[in-house]
Length: 384
Image (cartoon, rainbow, N blue to C red; front, side, top):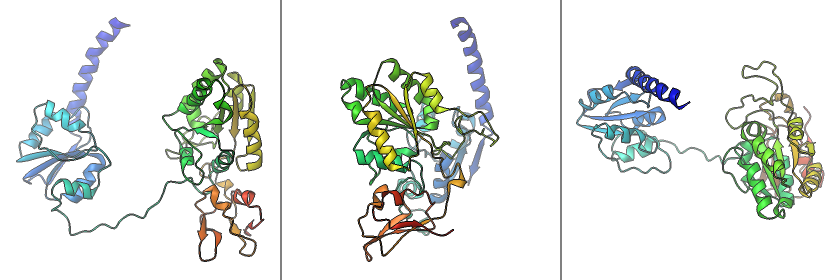
């Protein structure tokens, strides 16, 4: 109620003052006797410490509310004070508003900071005696054995338009799968597919699908599905159930069957949820059965109402039992057609000298997808 909120506002402001007082102790000063000073926090502190060892550094442990007394005391000990933060000038703006004089830096708010960029900001004349080796290039890709790869391959084969979502499966946009066409925010895939459907009078529903992971579906996808059913749409939604929250570090979710501590927990039944909100046509498929996936995709995109396809293979990090003996390509049977390369598995590479594909046994997880796309029976499982 407004009357209650007005009273609580006083408490909020008092709490901020208490936090600000406590934040004074969450700071550290390095090289305090230096002539010039830098205020920084988090990862940028590491860059500053490596690039500018001759500068005084005030490392903030809490960036809101700022420890203004400690900052003013630090500022009084240096001739010039800079702020190094990534990337918008949030701390700098707060300090300027509080009357603290901050020396300007000619920096961009695009890209990201590094030891080298911080060094360049300050003239590039410090700590140049320790050259850094360039990092090896590693393009983003779904893991070898990823349970999303098969369904994306089927989608690619059918040339469907895909409204994507936030998760590992966003990497389906990468070549050679090229099976994600849009990505906005968590849960948006279902709503965008509904928009395609309604905006085209149902025409685009026959050539488009939404893809969303199990964790994201539980987070913000269910409401979009309810809206699609309620407004009598005709879109097809694919819930990629790999039983884990893969993108952010393999945390459990309500569909995993375990809690955050790894103990058994009630497991959400996605098929039951979809039917409960009014979806009449729900099919569960093995994403590595490419022929089945293609058949089901054709069936569901042709329906004049909302339908859901659920894939049911666990992430290899959620269930290590999914890892099997690796596969190998026969040098006598391989004709060099490159069909196996089109699934985009990082374990499969092309050897130009031999004009044949090769499977790295150290990376292969034995998922069994590649032999299903090889029409010449050139791929078989190694003996375990």
